[in-house]
Length: 76
Image (tube, rainbow, N blue to C red; front, side):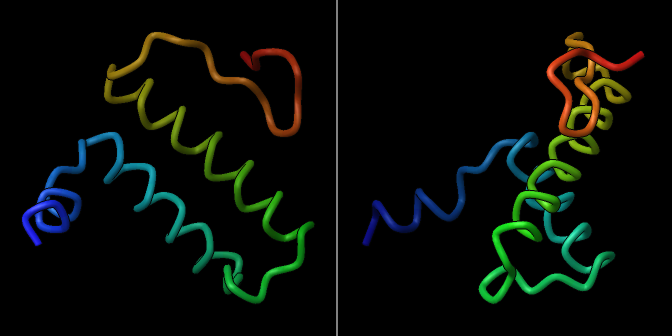
């Protein structure tokens, strides 16, 4: 039981930010993850990644440039 308690109480600020972004993108685009198509899942994963990385940069938690949507290179 102690392991389960630790698991649910030790998330980082970055974890909370990522999950918050993920759930807000699902809600914004009306996507239910368990029933989403592979295309919908890929879209939500990508838009979550971009918004998460932008928020990290805005909060100065990361100095890495943000890669564009479905892009190999970094966006401006």
